Amino acid sequence: METEVANTDKVKVRNRYGDPWIWGIYCTLCLVSVVEAFSASIQQVGTAGIYGPIGKHIVTMLIGMAALFVTQFVSFKRRSFTWSIIVFALLTLVALVYVMNHGQVINGAMRSMSLFGFSVQPAELAKLATVLLVAFIMSRYQEPGGVRNIGVVLSAFVVLLFGSLTYKQGFTNTAILMCISLSMMLIGGVQVKKFLVVLLVYGIAGVGYMAWQDKGGDEPAVANNGREVVDRSSTREKRLDRFDWSEDACLEHPLTDKYKQEQYAYMARAHGGIFGVFPGNSRESSRLPLAFSDYIYSIIIEEMGLVGGLLVLVLYLALLARAGRIAQRCTRAFPALLVLGMAVMITVQALSHIAINCGMVPVSGQPLPLISAGGSSMVAINIAFGVMIGVSKNAAQRGDNGRVVLAGSGGDDRSRVLQAENPTQIK
Image (cartoon, rainbow, N blue to C red; front, top):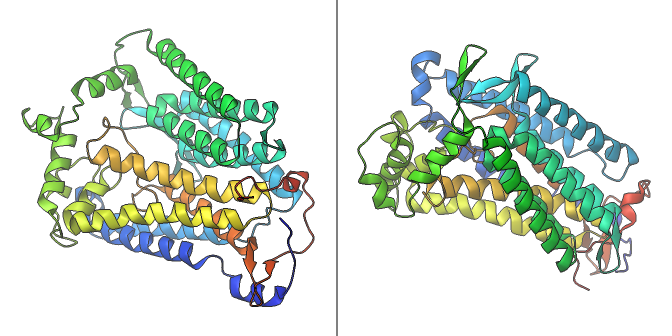
């Protein structure tokens, strides 16, 4: 595709703030987050006061917004950005290894670490690092008609490495990493045979690792930092055993701790009906475990109804569609894979949260991007939005005279990785 630079000044002025649709989706999700996080935080009121939980959530959002503000100005065209990716990935690996051995216990598993007084969950950063590394690798090893073998192997290795380190913190995290990478491979033009081989390798590695981790059977809980660490193999088996596709099945069981997550989530959705009971009038937020994080979508449906639940779902799907549109305007592979990879990461995580809340898959903890309470997830998702906005500032656009222009072109394409043509463009 030939790119002609014309009327560049006009395009820079028009596009200097990034894609307005992404900004609109971001602001809408933030608004929903503030309203629903405040409504769903009733379980924390007893220890933190009425405004304590929402105050903490807003501070977390502001930190995330600061990360977005900085990220959107980072130039992915410079070689320093590629080095930043490698450094960030290495730091994430170190944090994951540390948490596996010395982490703080959250909901029965070692998931977090303390950094400068803040609780950090490296699993959330691992998703971001995976997208950055896979985008970099596949851009680096593009070839006519697909991706070179070494690029596919390295991408799969990155996912298996991060997946093995996040597995004990929750199998859903590992599954999401695999889904993100497979989506990016399809987007990046990986040949069908190579894609199927990667899919087979993921399956074998996943089954083998699960068998190796679970070979000890049910083990007694052990203490860590004064809190209990639950045997995750036993937890997974129990969740799978009680999972039933029929929502009525969970209501047939007595209301006990074993089924309360599924049952209270069902009650919240049923109570919401079509239009909801209006924000602040939730009945189940005081009874539903982790209503402010892992089950906030159920509270959204209760308060905003089916209409509100569908609106939130559409926002995430619209983000993915808009990222695809921006990717098609990019002239090189790296920014196209970056913007789509970030959108896929956010959307896959959102769909996982929604599927869990709606009883479509077994219970597992997964925050709703940009809405659920949680510092690490909030910062990681804001960085992802910052990357997408930054790419949208430099995507090719149509000038007033109909000619294609490249916004923000300054001749600073110093990194070799940017030389690969965009595989998402329709020839």
